[in-house]
Length: 390
Image (cartoon, rainbow, N blue to C red; front, side, top):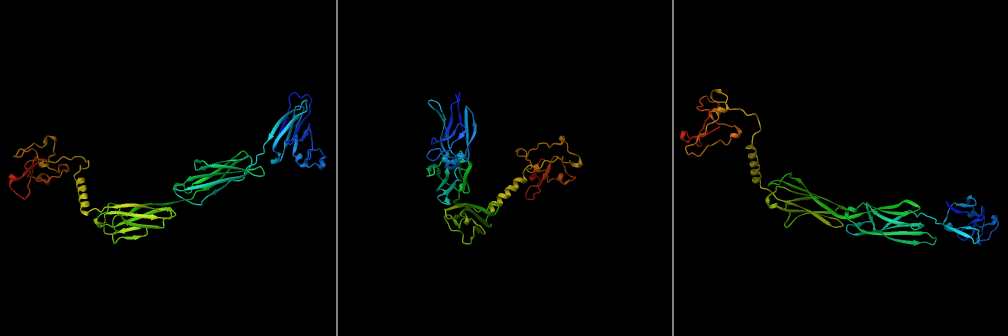
């Protein structure tokens, strides 16, 4: 629906009329006129434009306004309409009607159905039959792409618009949607979408299935090669860099199994996977540890924990001879050995372990502050006895 309005200020009873783009009279005052193709007024019964004239309806007529509506607008109605006031000389004003025709649903075409990573792809989006010419935008997820647009006017005064875009793809683009968005004043939400299909070489990683810790001599080794790609890898192989794989190693599909490890198996083991796009690999460096080294390390660790500070427990005072509770006044007196080399304390004092008469509860403990322990070798000579203060 279009509306054409002719307004006049301070009209002096002059006649208002509306002319079409061919300057043929549509309305003279409030009277609709019928015109033929040659512009001659004829009887409405034989008027060639009767149907077209019926689409013009008078909305309002007064001394100051002539307003007309046009229904079922078509492309043939486009042009400049003339509002004419019969004065001397005549006065005219103009109203332009532009017919908007929405384009059809856009279509995306691809130069190739699938593309390998690192290569360039080309997409073309076409919107046909619009007026005026539409504009086209490209979006890849949140990224706007720059395309090259082409406009062609057809025989029926319509426009066909196409846009071409080129860009390189990566494996991350596989499955990503690319949208062609058509902007036109007579259409909303006019777009098309295409998902990219990208081929890429395998991604490889080696998983240690066994052992869980460091590989030791005598252990078994089991490695699994996990390979993904598009298309899926058609070949997975194992090799040993700069050496041969041990003769008794077993390869089953993507798994490598070696039993009874020893240090001669040390080296870099490589899993190689390939598909139609390319190949990739991952390495595992094997170092077999000696059993004795691990055992010694474990023994030192246990020893360290054994001589660490004991758990915090309430301190219990040792009892003196006769069952009397030890008090702070009974702290041991300092004694020196004959060599004057200072005090010698028992290394296990922190653990409160006493191999003395007192610790055994012997009644013949001569001195509550001094414990006598026989020297090594089973000597009974008292000169070779050592004193430890506890």
